[in-house]
Image (cartoon, rainbow, N blue to C red):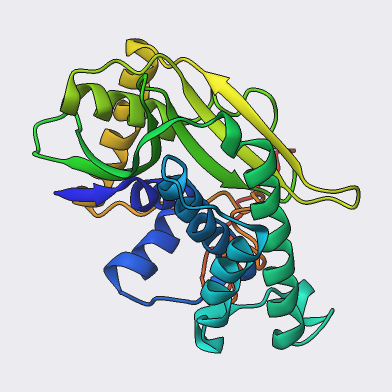
Length: 274
């Protein structure tokens, strides 16, 4: 069974959401944050592909790449959260998404791109998982540099913390997959993080070195997730988790484990001794 990292990560976040999305194929539109991130990815990929060429890349070119992606989005492809609906229309939010995506992309171009030495972009790898079944994870690396360094671009609403790269199972899997496929051990793995703010975009790189133990832990976690999918075990997220909220989960209002629509019976036995 071949699965993507995003699929198995989705399962680990909430098995019930995974079940509805992938098993029942009840696909729901992604949020504005996903659209913004995808638009930035499109612009960043273009920048990386042209990095080692003689073709000049202007801010106008970056803006064009962002808006081409944003304008192609259909209303049915993007869902507004409850909080977003209270603040403006769909068109208002699409304009904001495009403007912020442009700001993030400009920050990448100015503060991160000069320090990237890309050899491959969107490099496909497949990582075998442990266990009795022939399971694997298919992934695409944003950048593999000439020295084997792996880089992944992330757009966030807030700073993820200085240990985000160390805690990233995705980077650990990337390192494992690259070595398994090419025999090259990645000397380091980097998160290029873009966070919008009132004082401008924070664009910084967080570095980690995922060794064999870290890689084994990451593949082990996904192996358990794959086994859960095979067994048909789809555990819901904890009810007090942000993952089980209306702003994160598109199924929350109709999920028996979300809004709590399932009937609950409490049986209480009381005894009294004189």
